[in-house]
Image (cartoon, rainbow, N blue to C red; front, side):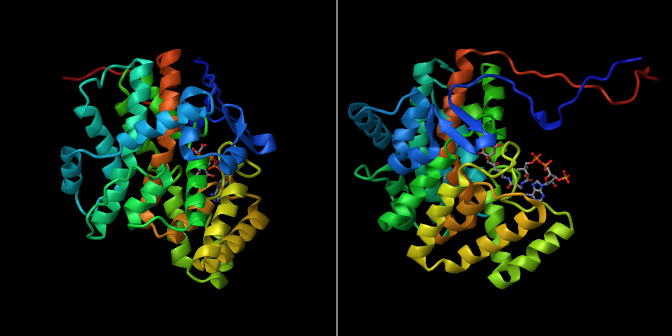
Length: 372
Ligand code: SDX
């Protein structure tokens, strides 16, 4: 008789490779990027500094930061053909479809698409990171019937994006909270989208293809799409007085509640305390008390019934809503940040590549003969 191997459904608990990019320690609810705690990075660094850390392994010196910022700012403009592609996307498609298509198009446009050298990939990673906010902001405004706002090279990454969306840089508390969210979203070891990017890279395919696959993977509500789902739920509840009953009904019906639970953290997501503070700061600046109340009630009801804690998407949902973004923009914003982690992993995969090709246990009908 055939021996059935152990099957690790969803690769749960399986260690598939090493990485020097980030370390998640579920037992102590901690997360480091290249050895630095994320809370430290969120408190002390700009998103550009964190991008440098992820790509090059070290926080930048002032000269390195200046160079990175110069190059990033110079690469923000979307060329005419890309902007015209955006205008051809169906009005009612999800903004993640736009982002996915745009990255795929950037690959098609790049004559050096198949140069997978580390140097070329670092340059492409920077270019994609620089132009994504321009694409996301243009799409946001298009859906509101507004003309795009050109990127501004005297603004930092976060400020420039907010300006391209809203036509003004919001107050510092909002900019800081937004930047904190970008830093927290930037990297998280072998999550599903990063793993998808590494699978594509392992075939020696190009970085644009890997990022395109990662975007498609992030879109799902069990992964990055959860930040949108959280806000759709909160808008449906609408009144904090209804939050407890809403949660109890969901749990009684054995439905998954978006923004709660995590494959790796079973005792709380290491990034939530930092992002919750950012949400409180945004709420204080925007009269958002109602959403904070709802947050607290939903969390309390879930934790006391099941012990399951919120993940990062739970505070980012209402924080982005209060900043003025349309709900469908939340996951594209996640992409704008996570592209730094994805591309760092794509480069790392290339440094010690092995084709990723697991095995499966056949469970279909036994072998049979074709009857002509
Ligand atoms: C991200 O991996 C990463 O690092 C991802 C991420 C990153 O930075 O890249 O952190 C970003 O994707 C955050 C996660 C966003 N997704 C959601 O918020 C969707 C809702 N959450 C879940 O569906 C769930 O918790 C997952 C998908 C996040 C994790 O799922 P697992 O590890 O496969 O766990 P499971 O679904 O098997 O749940 C185990 C138990 C089950 O109960 P039992 O069957 O054992 O009785 O916990 C229950 C689940 O029903 N459970 C939930 C729940 N999450 C887990 N019950 C209700 N609501 C939930 N959200």
